[in-house]
Image (cartoon, rainbow, N blue to C red; front, side, top):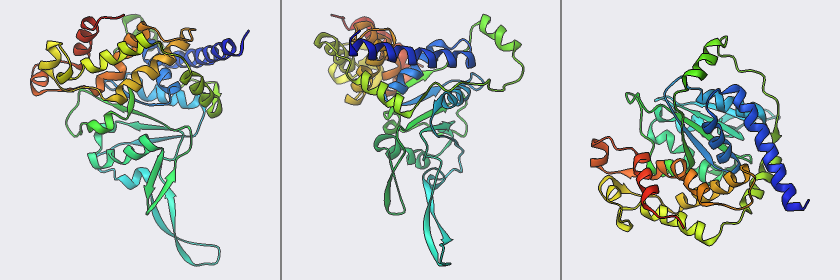
Length: 326
């Protein structure tokens, strides 16, 4: 077996172990789990959207228990301040009894950060995550401090209750690698959930540590993408922009489309999906499968699209039918 085959096999085995563990915790949400693991190994942040009670927070807690990473949770509320996230300068006494200012780290200083109900905080507080998510650093007290590596933000939000919530700014949405929609479970799954006693998280075995995650991300980054495949991904991204598309629905319902960061998210997560399926090359099917989670939050709908209740997924479905695959 070559070193390449060994790397792909190791990637697949570790990923399968993690997915198997998570499936014992979050029943009937296989696609949500797969997309979440894909985003993790692609080295990006995740936005989980679904109504309360579907297990979004439960998934993140289980993920934290399965990975040997430091974990912190931020419960977003309207009165939360940026310093409550990043940290603040405090006055304390040193060993000689003198009073000095020292920086007390906020909950953002963790490997895996759960931003629960992120849309309940004001835009000012939401923006405290921007530098952390993009640069892996926090600037506070006039000094820039590096966050621990690896660093992942997994945010949850409720799409139904709008009272007392603040929509995420487009700049922050673009920092999320994937937006994963958490649907209602099927009837058969609800039967199994109904038999469970309470909402206690079952014991989750340790699957991998930060170094192994970094090694898997490095393997994913080396997966080749053929020119016709990346050209197809580019065609999809360009088709999301009203000024560069011939798709009537996009011109009518979309105000702004995906940026080059959207293309990077689409190709990067497709690399991971290929490895999860035991292949060391990206296919057209990988691009099509990752188009919705990678691009849905990067489409800004026009007033007409919002007023008619058109969803980003509906526009993307039209694009996938309209853009020819090589």
